[in-house]
Image 1 (cartoon, rainbow, N blue to C red):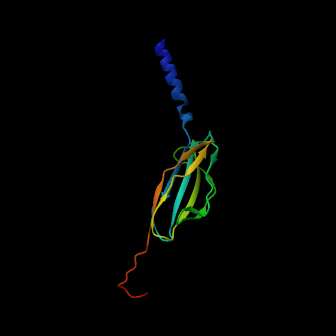
Image 2 (cartoon, rainbow, N blue to C red):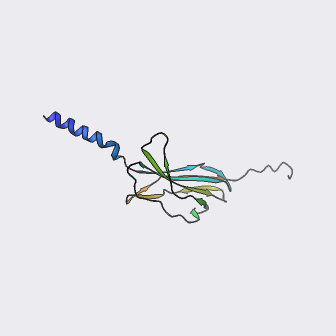
Image 3 (tube, rainbow, N blue to C red):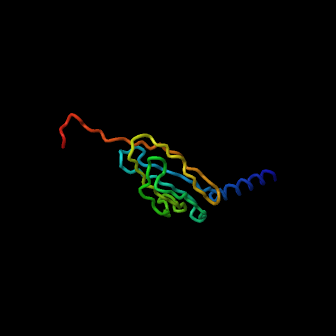
Length: 140
């Protein structure tokens, strides 16, 4: 009888597991190394099960993400379905970034609120390089 209870508990836990997948905030920065004036794209996203639409609040951004890193453009939040898994959906917002000063810029984690709970994405390091100039060649 005790074995039957254990099997029943295990079966119940495994049957609700696909529905218990938590929503997850994520961020991707591409590329992480740019030249002065080039743009990098920071994609903020929240994945969730299609039948469990969460309440998501992306932060509001001004024209600067961190000192010397400007936000050129920010997209509206878009809803995407992944091709691999028909049951998973993703909310996505893109920030187009640039810088006019060379250096290494630490982009801190972005705080995204999902169903009232705050989640932080990972932090990034954006490298901005200058254009190499050949001083031995003539003026062109």
